[in-house]
Length: 73
Image 1 (tube, helix red, strand yellow):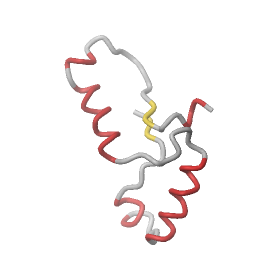
Image 2 (tube, rainbow, N blue to C red):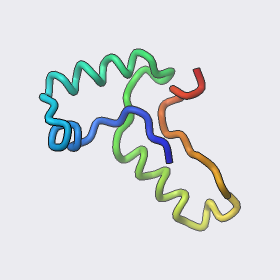
Image 3 (cartoon, helix red, strand yellow):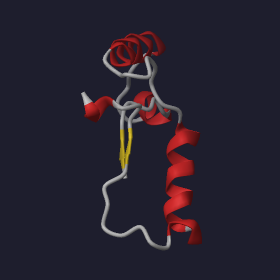
């Protein structure tokens, strides 16, 4: 699992960023992402759930990018 920019509580709790710093960082990252926005935690969670369930039974040895297309440019 390779998530892109996904603001989370860790930005504030672990990194000590302020709300304004998180917003500035997110806005900058959104500008370089084909979807034009940062991700949300539930979007990464849905990808993890997919890999953990039987729907992905034939998926093997992949790196799943959940990054709004950022690695494609």
